Image (cartoon, rainbow, N blue to C red):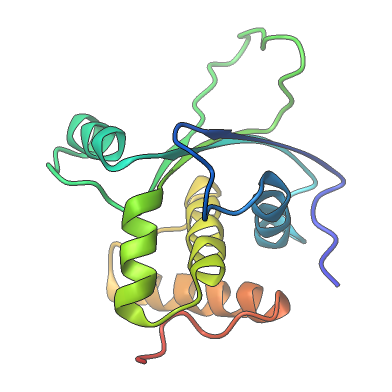
Length: 162
């Protein structure tokens, strides 16, 4: 059973109606699984957005004019900066998940919707820890880790062709 970090604060915000979108407890469970054995304390935020906001953020921060499934914004805290009350270190950062894109992809790929949310939450959390998939070797390592984490949650390999 996945235990997760000793101290984990995950704030989940919904910028659209929650119908069909997992509850905050699910997102917390998926983040805990991604962090288990990797980090002992963490604070991060997840925002679930519509396509308009997802597209605007992707355009502004990545220069890509479309809504993508998940965006990761690792925290950058300058040394000596006092954090607001209640914010813990390590402050990992923020994830933005675009609900319409996730729903479309799950349908197109024949995946259960909650499993796809779990995968993208794990994927984004690993990005906050510094993992990336910029080259083939890094992608293989990150995908292997994602498969292991998701298998521990009882979720099928997200990279299998269906």
